[in-house]
Length: 183
Image (tube, rainbow, N blue to C red; front, side):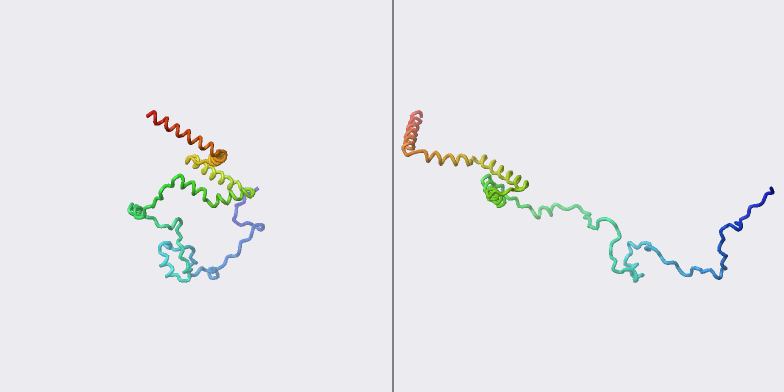
């Protein structure tokens, strides 16, 4: 078999190329292409660019930079500002005042009334009520006030008769004489 040279022609079965268009018939790009994107320095010279191209959105005044726009103080704050507005310290409450404040709390009174009526309290309300009652109890113990002692004292006074009181008074007088005799 004889050797045949390769050609660039595809032959009959190859895809056909479009016929060549003459130079005169070709549509040439005339003028400038449409510009895409912002011009250089557009971020800093926004007012200048808007003056040159008024057809663009003139209402857009948004700062394209990212991050916080909050101004940063470059100098350290002086201590005179702090001393200009001193905080007024309230005097510390005594234990009696704390106890009165706790007992006069409207929320505490409302929750106690609800308990007396037989209503159920939510878990948060019950927890708060227990804490307040524990604080009141601790303050009463600290002050030496006890509900039990007050309840027992009237019971004893009712049981005491006039004769018992008189006997106690006379024995007190005898104890006083014994004490004076020692010294």
